[in-house]
Image (cartoon, rainbow, N blue to C red):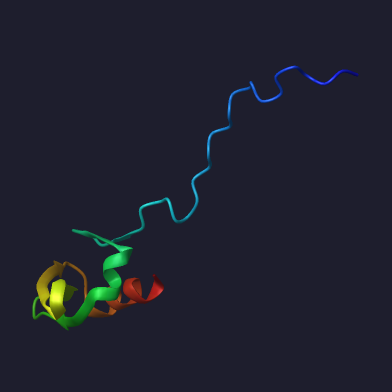
Length: 86
């Protein structure tokens, strides 16, 4: 049996996506947060009408932080279950 003249002339197989390639999201009823933002969560507080507020401290240059908050329409316990499962 003779070897092929051009063995690599076939179409290259498509690269399969890995876990690192996928965009990881944590989904709540009204918002979705990227998984890489979970390490910047500063505080999770309970709000009086059954909502939860998540505060983020996102680092900037020279030790400064940018503070942002997100209001989630879930109870505190359910929000903590979702955050701890990620």
